[in-house]
Amino acid sequence: MTESPYHHGNLRAVLLDHALRRVRQHGPSALVLRDLAKDAGVSPAAAYRHFDTIEHLRAEVARLARQELATAMLAARNRTSRGRNASLRRFEAIGRAYVRFAVDEPGWFETAFAKGTVLATTREDPMAWDVLVDALDELVADGTMPARYRETAPLVAWASVHGLGALLSTTPHRPDGTPVDEAIDVVVAGVVRALGIIR
Amino acid sequence: MTESPYHHGNLRAVLLDHALRRVRQHGPSALVLRDLAKDAGVSPAAAYRHFDTIEHLRAEVARLARQELATAMLAARNRTSRGRNASLRRFEAIGRAYVRFAVDEPGWFETAFAKGTVLATTREDPMAWDVLVDALDELVADGTMPARYRETAPLVAWASVHGLGALLSTTPHRPDGTPVDEAIDVVVAGVVRALGIIR
DNA sequence: CCTCGCATGTGAACAGTGTATACATTGCCA
DNA sequence: TGGCAATGTATACACTGTTCACATGCGAGG
Image 1 (cartoon, rainbow over the protein chains, first blue to last red):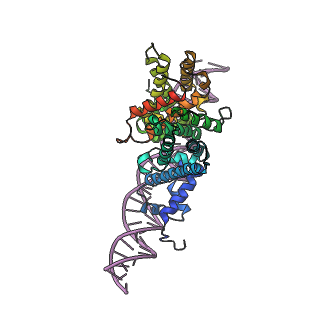
Image 2 (cartoon, rainbow over the protein chains, first blue to last red):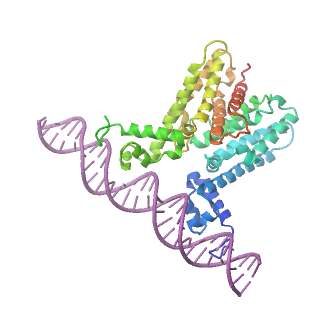
Image 3 (cartoon, helix red, strand yellow):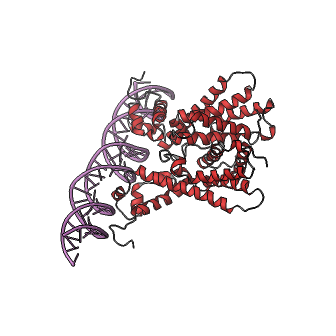
């Protein structure tokens, strides 16, 4: 495959793949049309057969980045062992994974939430949101979390981890400040208290 | 003043002023050198006598935007009446002001925390950070907040309001979701609980 | 007071962007 | 098999940031 110069068939996917790779290493600003075209061995104008404008391409890459985030959260969730306090440990693992993703993959994280790319966070790709909601339902179901906080819990939890993630991925890690892992523990513990959970 | 084409003396300040104005209305992407030069009635190259590169200009504009944020927080703090629970109401007012700034001035908020412009949030311009820390000290001093949470409180509070602000200013306000004011109330209440404060 | 030096601004150019348009190629289907 | 719609090319254009040689004028030292 990938022989004929014309019609190699999946140019759209190839462009997105290279975009995701570039953005991962060098951030959203590394997403430049002509470079992607060169990566794919194609003329710059060819991209316009698949994306009306580069903003549309950018939006799609952002969606894929958000998908990566959801995958990381889900993986962390499934990595958690069963047993005592499993629901709480799962919930904490998800939160930690969110911030970890922001720190370990700053390029993807920044891309995921770049202005103009998010049309409706919870509507369009409910994956990450659903992972959170399911974890919260579990907490209520086994009595770990008071039901009265259930309604507001998603926003409280999401704001906290998103804020920490944004701060840690934007600000270069200062050697004097709190180490990353401690910061994560602190914020996750804060969320747990905010949800009325007593350990 | 502003007569001689050459050496109008405060070009640097004028450029920053126009940049702040443009960025306020149309976001960070509206910061284009040639337009700023045109605004100031000056050749594009003139800017290079005051800024090595546009990134330096951007960084300075970001600093000014963060200063606006701190000013808004301080104003909200001082607008709070004295009386019963004054320290808590002040603290809440500060948090609300942070998110309100993100919602009401998305251009400035986004500019303030754009990647690469924040060298060390808490170090470089401690204004906003200090406002928060002072409010927390007050809470501990009058016994509203347990002292054991004092150390981790700044990070918990900051992450929450910054996260909500980032989400609300990035995501266009969806008519179906929680109204902005309710979202703010929910998150602020969450922070209060996370800090072990019982109303 | 004058003059010369240095800070500041100008003009023209260049490389790198996204994008539009006219044209070329190919796969597919009637 | 012939033609047509989908896909890719070549070229050009407007708009970025940036550089460099040159122009200007303010202010300090004779």
